[in-house]
Image (cartoon, rainbow, N blue to C red; front, top):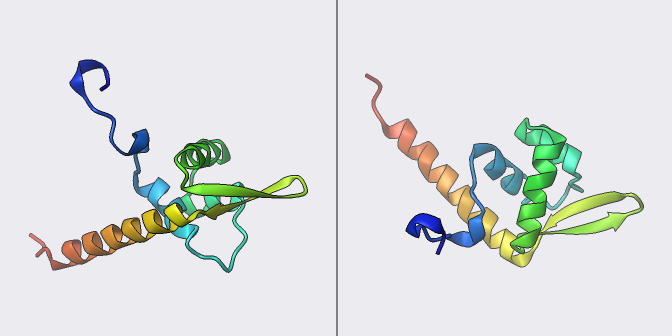
Amino acid sequence: MKEGGAEEVGGGLILKGKQAKIIIALKDKNQEWHIADLAKVANVTYVHTSNFIKACEQQGIVSYEKHGKIKVVKLTEKGDAVANEIANVVNILAQKSADVPSQ
């Protein structure tokens, strides 16, 4: 339990829209994803992306492969499952917003 009685759920990893874009982008296995590429996809800074990827690595969602000085980021098996669930939620929300009549 955290201070104030709040329980930490999901290892403390909180996703917002831009973080979700990063995870969903990693589903594309045809591309070698570097942190700079992921930052561009999500329209966030390199540092923000690097910190988020480090948190994901601690949760077992991503892993790194070193190619010389460059790190290639990949989803783990757990990360694939997480990315699929995030993509499903995004799709459901997109459908719901399309179904809502404009006022």
